[in-house]
Amino acid sequence: MEATPRRLKQNKRTQLSNGDKILGGRFEVLKCIHSRGMANVYIVQDANLGKQWCLKEIRKSEAGRKNIEYISLLQEANILRSLNHERIPRIVTIDNDGDSLFVIMDFLDGMTLKAFVDEKGKIPEEMAVKWMLQVVQTMGYLHSERAHKKPIFYRDMKPDNLMIRPNGTINIFDFGISVRVEEKGQLPDYTLGTPGYVAPEQKRKDLPIDLRSDIYAMGMTFYFMLTGIDPRGFLNSKLKPISDWSPEVSPALIKIIEKCLNENPDDRYQDCEELQYALENYRFSDEQYKTSARRKVYTVLSLFIVGILVGIGSLIPLFMERAEEDNVYNNAVLVADQSGRLEDYDYAISLRPWELKPYEGYFEAIKQDGVFSQDEEGKLLNHINPNLKRIKESADYGKFSFELGKLYWFYYPTGNAESGSTLSIRWFEDAINRNYEVDESKIYQKLGVFNRDISKSVKEASDSGMYKEYWDNLLSIQNSDTSDIITLQTNISIAKCISTYANNLRKDGVEYDEVKGELDKLMLFLGRYNANADNIEVVDKLYKELSDTLNGLEDRVRVVYNISNPGGSD
Picture (cartoon, rainbow, N blue to C red):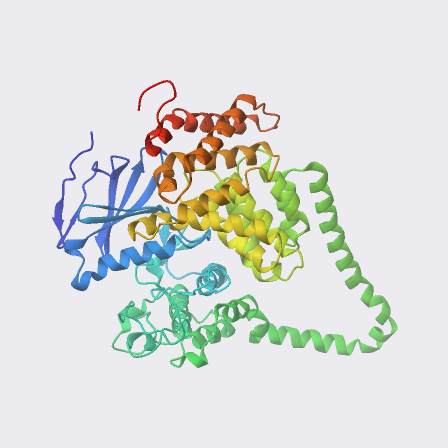
């Protein structure tokens, strides 16, 4: 039985108590992480999946002036559910319950960068650069029009919003004041941001939103990492140079941070790609490196005569080194192709992640157990995301993105924070843009968009007509592949469409005879089906899911369409 939430008054914001159950009893509150900022934040246990999530809650009655906190949480949820990046949490559920808006997302275990520095002190240069590169790459994804049509202005970069995970990756969280940039010259609704980290132009409501403001905040965050000094303590005085706090930091790295922190956005790095390149190559502009390089030049010049005599021979090691690299890579691909093992493909791709040749075998290796797991997804995206720009330069990128889209659509496990069909959208869109299997890609893309947008459309009462299009698209892919898993997944999608949306299909003009005909096909398929796949366990599970979905479905459809039961009464 679902408990009535016991609410405690704290800092003018009521909060749920440990043990409270919400949203039909599915989620149980384990702990309140904090009740400050713009929402209550909890750890909750999912009774259906047996795992823990992060829950954010805001009550409309306590949402601040003009409901700004409620609007911010809803805005954060809508932004997050459109993203697909391993270093950004995913949305599980967005729901209202009485006065409260609940947003359930991935729970990030670890320690914030702020807490880490406060506890252990400033971060050594090499580690700081490594971590900051992850941050810059993720911010580059947010700013990219290629990744999602409208760039996202994060607006609150600071150490408090960076989580150091146990595996060493840095996740960005708390998108409460982030905003999607819909058009050039867009003005901010509010002048929000954290003092000490916010860029000068971000404090003004009359200036357009500028993604370079995030560059400034990243520079200030980097300053904190290298010095341990929080700029929030210097709001009324000028920050000292990094060298005053940390004289061991490379002058070249200091110049990069200083460029990020220029008052004028035109004098900063103009995008994350520029900043990433500077961080990856800063040692080549370092004075100590230059001094060492000059010594090497002098040495080479002093041996000039000897160099002439052996000039041709001196080139041989360079060619040999490149040839050896090619040999190692080609052998790795050959071994992977022969073994078919996922770990062999993973190693081959790690050598040259921008080369698409081994990915085809990698995709097939993932399919062997019938499931594209989140762990496999994380490893794959760790190859793809940092190298996506180079990967897109390949002539075969259209095929690559199409096959990756199908991998998500058919093999990604159900019950995850976001469905595989939704995660596949960006890849099918890329396949369309590259003119690869355009008709089929458009169908899958539309199916994914339906699954992503239907809940929102229902709430906005704009869902009329969507169900028939979804139905027609599902039927068009019904016999597109002979694979056991793909065939079963497609038939399950059709059965669930009927089970979930029968009334909507009727309203959209789908006739009973058409629905009944598809049910007959599915029942015939169920009776004749004989699995011949290697991954029989997954296939059996899908078969049972289809059987369970079809159980009693014909009777329910007759009720929806007001059709008499043959041999019975109305």
